[in-house]
Amino acid sequence: MPEVLAIRSLHAGYDKLVVLSGVDLSVARGEWLALLGPNASGKTTLLHCIAGLLSPSGGSISICGHSLREQTKAAKGALGFGCAPESLPDLLTGRQCLEIYAAAKGLAAVDAGVLALAEEFALAPMLDRFVGSYSLGTKQKLAVLLALLGEPALVVLDEAFNGLDPASALVLKRHLRSRVSSGSCGVLLATHALDVVERYSDRAALLLEGRIAREWSREELAALRAAPGEGLELALAAASAAS
Amino acid sequence: MPRGMAAHPHLASKLLLLGNAWRHKRGRMLLAAALILAGCAAVAAVPPTGSILGWLGRNWAVAFVIATCVFALSAARRRQRAAIDAATSWLAALPAGSPVLLRVMLASGAWLVASVAFTALVWAIGAIDRFAFSRLALSMAAGAVVGFLAGWRLPRAGIGAPGFHYAIVRRPRARWASAPSLAPLANWPAAQGRIFSRPKKSAPVLLIAMMAIPSGLHDAPGQVALAVAGACLALFSLLSLSKAAVWVAVDAARWLAPTTLERWRFTGALIWRVALTQTATLGVLIFLTSIIDLPRVLRVGLPLAALYLAASLAAAVAASLLACRRAGLGA
Image (cartoon, rainbow over all chains, first blue to last red; front, side, top):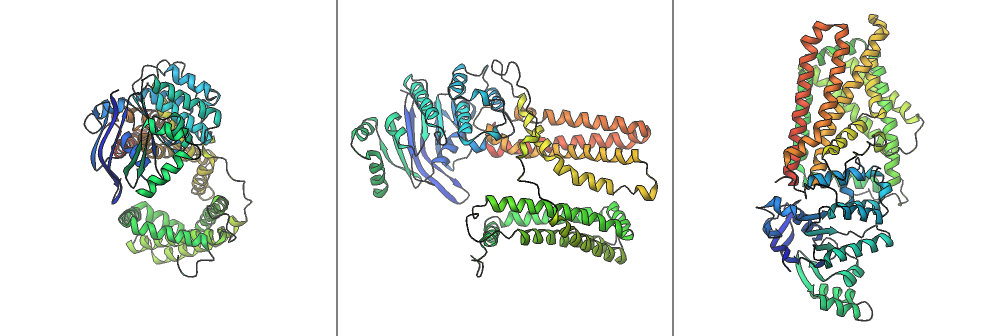
C-alpha cells in the first residue's frame, strides 16, 4: 500500500522550547496507526505540524507524496484533520460548520457517508443549534465529521474518543475501521485509549521526549492482545522505562 | 510564591501569573503599555478633550454624577464577575475564600487613578486650567467612592447565561448539503457583533450619551435626546461589528487552516455580512439625519460615514490576512 503520510527527521517547538527532535513516521493507505505517549510528549504538536498549524523548524512532511511545505494545497487536499473540540466556532451551528468546511475543502456536496454517520451519532437533531451549546462529546462528534468530509486519504485525529458515549465510540471505531479496511484512507490517531490500540489499530508508535521511542507491528499488537493481563500497558511501561 | 501570601492563594496566583507574564512576555507588555500611553497622549492633545473636560470642570456636579454612575455600574459588574470567577476558579475548593471585595476595590481604585492621571495629562498639556483639574479630580474621587458603595450594594443578578444566547440562529440554506457555500461563515462575526453590543454592554454607552445631553441647560427637545440615544446605539453596534470582524478572524483562520481555502476567499466570506450591515446602518443613519439638516449631512456626515466604512473594512481585511498568515491558511 502506498504511503499517505511520510514524516522525516521532523523538528518542531514553540519559541525556544524544543518539542519534537527528529521524528520519523509513516502511515500507509489502509493502515490505522495509533500514536501513544505520556502527557506533554509532543503528540498534539506533531499533529499540528501535519495539519499545517505549526511550521516545523526542520525535517519534512509529505501527504500522499505532496510536500506540505512546497505543495501545500495538494497536501492539505488529501488531509482530514479533527480539530480540538474547543477550537470549533461556538457561534455557528453544527450544520453551518459542516457546510463551511465542505466549501473550504472545495467539495461539490457534503458526503452522504458523513451525513449517515451524523445520524448514527444521533447528532442530526443538534445540527441547528450553536456549537457553543454542545457538550464535549457532541463537539467531539462534530470535529470527527469535519475531519471525514471529502473522503480524505489521510485522517488525523487527536483524542477523538474523549467525551464520547460508549455507543458513539463504538460507531466511530467501526466506521474508521471499515474506511481503513476498504483501503480508502490511512488513519493517524493520537490516543490514550489502549483498547482502541489493541483492538482496532494496525500499528502503534510511542512518542517519548520528542522522538519515536518504540513501534509495535500488527503481529506484536495481536500478540499483546492475546496475552493475559495488561499486555500493552506493561509493554508501554517497559518501553518508557528503557527510554 | 511571595512570602506571607500562603494564606491568600487567589492573590498569590494572580501575582505569580503577572510575574510569569513579565518574565516571558516582557516585550509585548512594554509595547502594549507604550501604545496605551501614546493613545492617551494623542486623545489628551485633541482639542475637544480639553473643551469637554473644561466644561465638566466648571459643571462639577455633572462630572460627579457621571463618575458615580460609571463607578457604580463597573463595581456591580466587577462584583458579579469576581463572584463567578471565585465559584469556577481552580482554587475554589480551598478553604481560603476569594477576596471579592479587595479585587473590586483594587480595580475601581486603579481606574480612578488612571482617570485622574489622564486629567492631569490634559492639564499638563495646558488644555485645562488648574482650577478645572482640581475640581474634576475631586468630583471623580467623590463619585468613585459613592459609586463604589452604591454599586457594591446593587442587587446581584444570577450567573449570566452564556453570551451566545444573544446571537440569532439563522435558518440553514436549502442546498447546504448539495451545494455547500462559504456564505454562512459571515454569520460568525455578525453573531459576535451582537454579543459585543448586547444590552448589558450598550446600557452604559446609552447612559453616558443621555447624560451628555444637557437638556435642562440648553432646552434640548426630547426628540433630539432620543435621536442622540438612537444614534449612539447605532454607532456602538457599528463599532461592535468592526471589533467582531477583527476578533473572529484569528479563530476562524485557525479553524480552517487544515483546509485548502485561499486567503482572499476566506477574507471575503468572513466580512461580507459585516460590510453589508455597516453600510445599511450608516445609510439609515444618514437618511434620518438628512431629514434634519441635509446640507450638513452631505458636507460632514457622508464623508465621515465613508471614511468609517473604509477604515473598518481595511482593519477587517488586514486582521483577516494577518490571521491567515499566522495560522498557515492558504499558504
